[in-house]
Image (cartoon, rainbow, N blue to C red):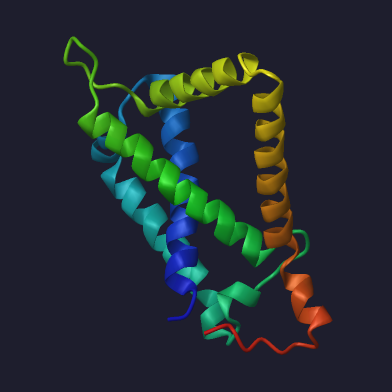
Length: 165
């Protein structure tokens, strides 16, 4: 109901992304193997996160308005969406992509390769390219800042929120 499915999926994706990359860095196990080895623990965490995410709905608070101190619902939504995309990409790369020897590429290796490619591209930029990259960085930073500050929009608009569902 409302924004609950997206909030739950985003929270699970953020948790899953960090946990799976950490496990891969320590034990070099692919995501599918991690889930197979700890299926009961994964199911328990899924159930706990899902049930605790629905508590605000039971109390009558829509999740998109459940801000707590520095934690803003809009920032959580943005981070959750990015985590869902990243987790899907990295898991897909493990399933579909393999090295020449037929071994599965770990998600942590895919992430390291992507970071190295971006760093290499940044170091090879000329003046126009650097200006473009700086513009994109400012645009992304501004978008993130606006998503973080979105709850203040309620204060400025007097609490009228017609465009929400």
